[in-house]
Length: 170
Image (tube, rainbow, N blue to C red; front, side, top):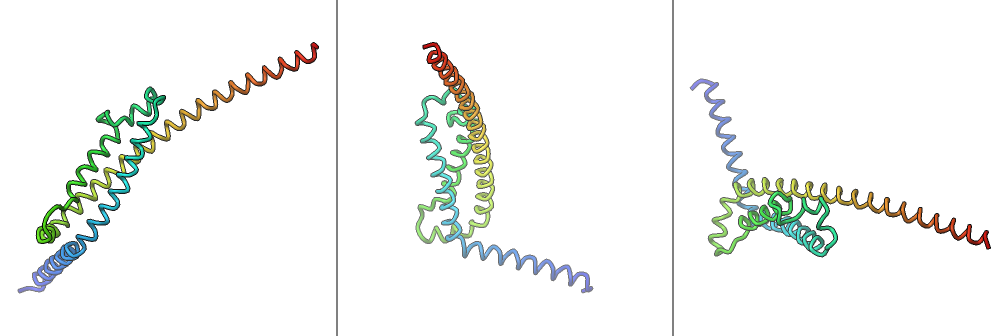
C-alpha cells in the first residue's frame, strides 16, 4: 500500500471515530439535553401564554393594525406560527414510553436535536417579529399620547388665558 492510500485511510478512520464519539456523547447526554430543551420550551410557552392573555384582555386595541398582525386567528401571524412550532417541539420532546423504549429513543437524539435547533431558530424568528410588531404598536401609542397631551396642554393654556382675562375684566 502506498503512503497516500495509508494517509487517506487513516484520515477516514479518524473522521469516523470522531463522528462515532460525537454520536455516543449525544446518546449519553440525551436525557439531560432533552430536559434542557423542555425547560427552554416551557419558558417560550409561558411568554406566549402571557402575551395571549394580555391581548385577550384588551378590548380597545382590536382595530389597531399592529394587533391585526399579531392576532393568533390570522394564519400569517407570528403568534400562530409560534403556536404551531411549539406543538411540533412538544411532540418531539414528549416521552410517554417505558424506560427501555426511552433509552432506545436516545439513539435517535442526535437527529432530533438537530431538528429541534431548527425549530428554536424558527421560534427566535417569531419572537423577533412579535417584538417588532409590539414596538411599532408602542410607537404608535406614544404618538397618539403625545398628540393628546399637546391638545390637553393647549386646552389648559386657553382655559388659563380665559380665566386671566375674566379676572382682569372683573
